[in-house]
Image (cartoon, rainbow, N blue to C red; front, side, top):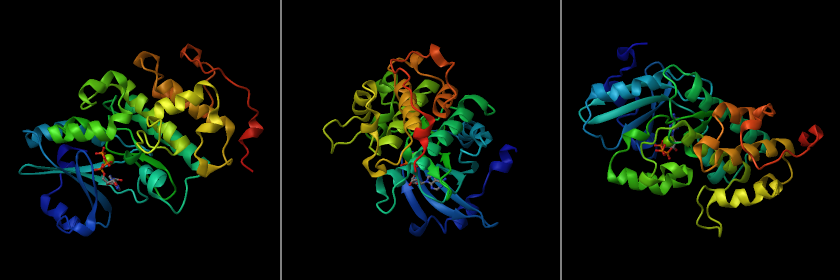
Length: 317
Ligand SMILES: Nc1ncnc2c1ncn2[C@@H]1O[C@H](COP(=O)(O)OP(=O)(O)OP(=O)(O)O)[C@@H](O)[C@H]1O
Ligand SMILES: [Mg+2]
């Protein structure tokens, strides 16, 4: 692939989105506005139009996004192309059809994610992040914005990480404010001074991944003003430290969960949100914990002692 092959003409993007019509509007985040589009060959795409551009030439923009196009993995949303037109900066991604994890956890009143779906989303998302951090050409790619809205789901509920590597593009005061409010729950302690904007460190991604695990288990928002203990980390750690793990589980899941998988997810979450980055595991170590192949990880400091759970406990009946 060359820089040229990634380029898309503005006319093509206009045609694909029906001139950015309201009918094709999907949503708006920190970086910009997202539209659904259909290319000439019939492929559906998500077109992300940057809201406000810093003084950056098209060449500089390209130099920053080009490495992201090499990230190709089952659990990563592929960046298909880009387009520059005047001050507009546009990214074109493959379209993922089954909404975001955010929607399934918090907005879908009709159907609750079951335990198997939650556990396999945790594993798939960890594999995507492992690829970005350790395996991808040009790695590490720091995601910088791990949270449920940036985990898109296929119709088979395969999780795909989107919006990796874009944090540095949110530059205006408005974006900083928005990120501070919207993402604060995911920002690692060492990065909070500037609201986490532009943070580039793999262990900050691991911290955010820990929050994500807590959300998968509990179905709670990272910061929830409607509950007395509104910070998910404080709330969850109080139960994890007492090994009262059943208290963490989303009440909508009822008893239909696997205790061993719950233990693995809670243990991984506990380690991921350690205040000191050096005490957090790498994402590969997180994956081993989640998959239950982590007995060699004794060097990872943990107050969470193993508990004996029989493998039969994993049967959900
Ligand atoms: N590749 C994609 N396929 C389908 N829907 C997408 C895709 N990328 C983003 N979306 C959807 O578009 C909407 C807006 O996404 P956007 O990334 O702009 O906001 P966000 O995820 O809420 O915030 P952030 O800026 O922190 O990523 C969300 O509902 C998201 O699920
Ligand atoms: Mg997003």
